[in-house]
Image (cartoon, rainbow, N blue to C red; front, side, top):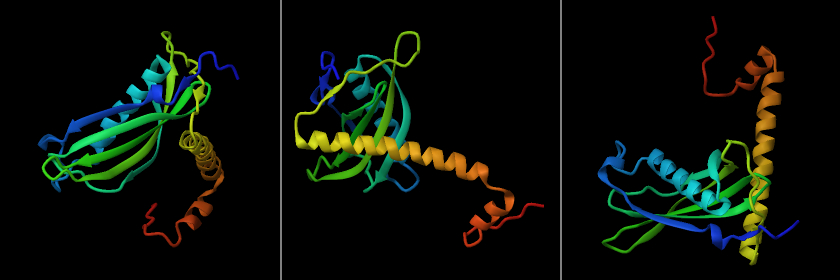
Length: 185
């Protein structure tokens, strides 16, 4: 592969910190997960667009894990980098940390991966630069990104083929020991 247009992981890195305001709160008084997802989507866009120098769109969100609640008043940092590149897509890894400004306590609250696609001025998929891996951690993340891409494709294939090929009885059998009531009159 030609490295003439390759870029380093470092060239993609983005860190954005935002104050969690009362308008972000859910009914339980914590920051709503949807707010965090929206902010992560924006950070993934910034990271992917910075790296590819193209307009980018979200293709998929993988592995969102809400590890710890975020409080109103926390300073939340979103740290992102391109971990993997395909021909026209990038997998952006995001780590979210919340800091209490009064106590200085920082906690890891979320991690996830966004698959982003680059688009050209005509809205067509655009090729992205190759990724220069400079250390073992970047190599590990690149390999994880490839696995995420493969798992995601396999998940879509299984859902499409297995469910569509089942008849009614097979679908009923799948629900036999589940917590549902089937009332199809």
